[in-house]
Amino acid sequence: MTDEVILCKYGEIILKGQNRRNFESMLVKEMRRRASPNGIFKIYSLQSTIYIEPQNELCDMDAMYETAKHVFGIISVNRAKACEKNMEAIIALAKSYLPEKLIGKRTFKVDCRRSDKSFPLTSPEIMREVGGAILEATGGSVKVDVRDPEVTVTVEIRDKLAYIRAGQEPGAGGLPIRSAGRGLLLLSGGIDSPVAGCMMAKRGLEIEALHFESFPYTSERAREKVMTLAEEMCEFCSRIHVHVISLTHIQEVLRDSCEEDYFTLLLRMFMMRLAERCAKEYKCGALITGESLGQVASQTLAAIGVTDSAVNIPVLRPCIGLDKNEIIAEARKYGTFETSILPYEDCCTVFTPRHPKTQPKIEDVMRELGKIDFEGLIDEAYATLTTETKLVFPEYK
Ligand code: ATP
Ligand code: MG
Image 1 (spheres, rainbow, N blue to C red):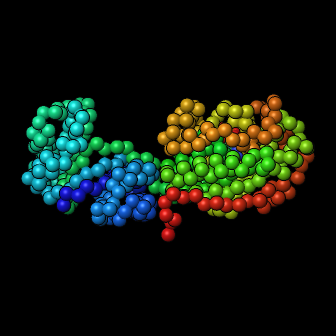
Image 2: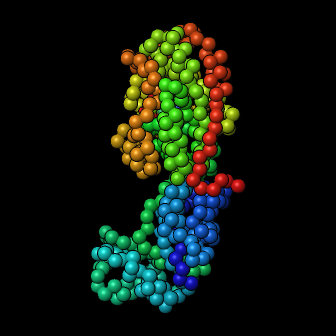
Image 3: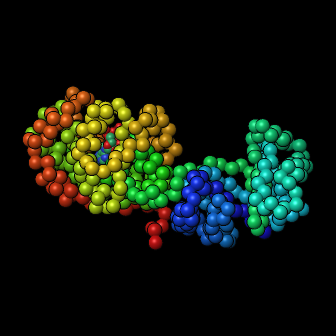
């Protein structure tokens, strides 16, 4: 009865009213799928908590704990042990389980959640008794500090059993992956777009990715870098289909036919239109980009206005209000930063204009577009689409 379990608390799902059951079952399904490489676990939800219970000695609890921290929809994860719902059992468990969790710590406090209101002791009484037991078991090496403790020990009196846990850590937050539909991420090899994808996955979008390459101006290794990024994102995004479209011919036509200052902007209009077509084919309700206002010439308000005019689908830009430093911090958190800074070329850096337009007028852009066969080039480029699937957990059944 004293096997360790992992308890995951959900975040915003609690606010979901009628739909709550759907969200919970999505979360449990996702957790089960991700747990499978770590051993055989019983996973279920009860009272706003996901319980993860190892079923045999072979289960890798450390790996499972790390896995649980990367599942969107969870706000905190904690290892815990369960016992019978009586004070004798609770005190015995506190004495045997907690001293090792408090090694090297100076202060603690005890919290109590008493969801079973018929339990004979009140929360303050339970807290006092368990606190006393801990002080006794640790021989004075830790002190109580109710204001700013290093470790919070929580005793939960739940429906069937009592649980003791200590050292809760934050989960990934957000909503369960796939609960908000699907979005198509324009994935370059840079820092920003992988972050944008993870941020929208956090809000429940399943991420599909589209990468534009420009072979031979961009290399095979640049493409591999993007595939590595997609694989790294799977740690949070679960599974990503990466579509790749070649822009080589479009870029050559732009170079040969249009005014240089408009290259980037025109290229971005092609990207957006191709992305829109891909989104429709793969049933994505929005495009996602890593743009941040004012970061480069193509990300001024005027330039964004022009690129948006090329499409008729919502464009989500979760990094729009973030500074580069903030985006980098997110990239480190999601584990994509080190790959993003590897120095490979991107199609955006091929034939870059010396003086890109930062305040483009739509009439001028349309005049430049009029010089080429926009729709024909779109059809031709879309025909180059190929797809690779990236995942680090078993495939969805
Ligand atoms: P990033 O770090 O994402 O590369 P960036 O600051 O380099 O961003 P840009 O190159 O202007 O910005 O690109 C803006 C956005 O356009 C990117 O965040 C990405 O969503 C999309 N994008 C740029 N290049 C590509 C590409 N080769 N394939 C797919 N999407 C791209
Ligand atoms: Mg880029």
